[in-house]
Image (cartoon, rainbow, N blue to C red; front, side, top):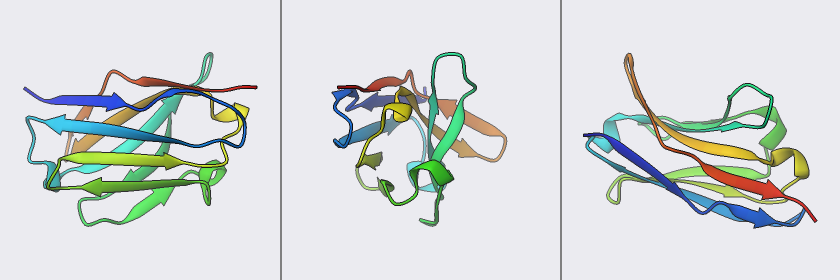
Amino acid sequence: QVQLVESGGGLVQPGGSLRLSCAASGIIFSFYDMGWYRQAPGKQRELVALITSRGTTNYVDSVKGRFTISRDNAEKRVYLQMNSLKPEDTAVYYCSAALGVATYWGQGTQVTVSS
């Protein structure tokens, strides 16, 4: 049974930082491309950051220079370090694992950026 469990969300002031973590089980983690998506109220889910099985990273333009995705294959975890947070970063953040046609999702963690 595949499980992706996110943690690390919360309420933070503008300019602050958070580190999201996603723990995976039930998959050969190192084979999978891992991603962080987010969905704000009334908006479509969007890809925020991706790290491939080989370690190549990609980011949506709005977070470049502020967010960093990383992975620990030994611990089966993927992280999203978020710095200089803005109110428009407020959303539910989801972890994903993709290999071929198979994609798995976590339950999401809320990130709220507000003063």
